[in-house]
Image (tube, rainbow, N blue to C red; front, side, top):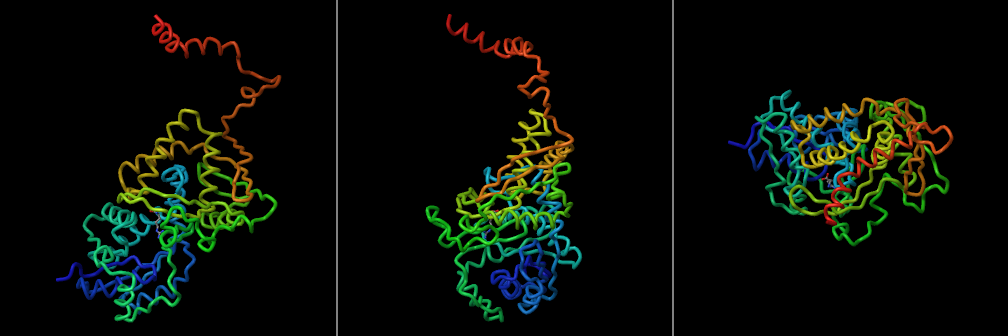
Amino acid sequence: MGRAKKVVLAYSGGVDTSVCIPYLKQEWGVEEVITLAADLGQGDELEPVREKALKSGASISLVADAQESFVTDYAFPALKANALYENRYPLSTALARPLIAKLLVEAAVEYGADAVAHGCTGKGNDQVRFDVSIAALNPDLKVLAPAREWGMSREQTIAYGEQFGIPAPVKKSSPYSIDRNLLGRSIEAGPLEDPWTEPLEEIYQMTKAIADTPDTPAYVEIGFEQGIPVSLDDQVLAPVALVTALNERVGQHGIGRIDMVENRLVGIKSREIYEVPALSVLIQAHRDLESLTLTADVTHYKRGIEETYSQMIYNGLWYSPLKAALDAFVNETQKRVSGVVRVKLFKGVATIVGRKSDKTLYTPDLATYGADDQFDHKAAEGFIYIWGLPTRVWSQRTRE
Ligand code: ARG
């Protein structure tokens, strides 16, 4: 008896996930492996990937076009929460995992599989995100993670695959481990494992080196409706088109690179490089529009929610009751977050230089230092007396 009869495997076309196919069948007695490759805007041709799965022994090779759902159902909710893990990483890789898990679970139901599988190792966050998301969506499905158990080195994995007709990588394989989708690229390992080593320029693809960026600034006006970006420079764009276009415009100016040491859920610190051009500027612009349209107390309270929300995405709890409750809070706050933010792009830096909204709470009559000032200055005196009263009493008593 094998560990499962019919398995849907998350498939990328790389050596590791390809080797998972014969491994599941030969070593774990799986009768049938169906692969599923999700198009999340990673830029790979998916037809060769589809064929490679069949050559590697898959009975059915599925390709899911998931870009729109990725942006609409995962990236934009995170944007509304200004989600940044450890205040810096916009979760571009992490957000893809619950979506892939959902696609796997749906395919398992459609094809009558009793398990799903992924190629994650035992050291990363992604295994947690897959396993927990799958459990949340269908607790009866088994999850198989061969690479967590097989204990093969890279060379051994390639040699194992060759026995089953999986070709060794043609190019000398890159020392880096790279995850890519429409939102960005995550690059780790190889020389980057030394946190003191500056990344080589060769690792970047979505963002230009500062030396190659234009010598004059560019501007982009991002329009938001209820917290969601809907236009660039007055041109209304669908979600995928908007993110694609903004990646290009922002990346031209070398904006969106992050070099950080982060704390993984499994207890390891890891050095990771991200390039997330559009998403980092969208978060910056969105937060700025909130400064115009949310009250002070909502803004301040929301910061705590954002922190929790970001940790939940990072830690694999996308499908969880707390996350759903936080979504309800965040969505309530976004009802008036509509307007336009003007961003200046220059030499690796995005600067917000203007914002406007029909829903603005900014009140010129109150803010002005000019003659039109409507603010009641005398009222400030009484307010300050009462505001400072506890401090005044404390001071008197501690002097006695
Ligand atoms: N550290 C990031 C995360 O946990 C990205 C991991 C992606 N993998 C990679 N090969 N860089 O979300």
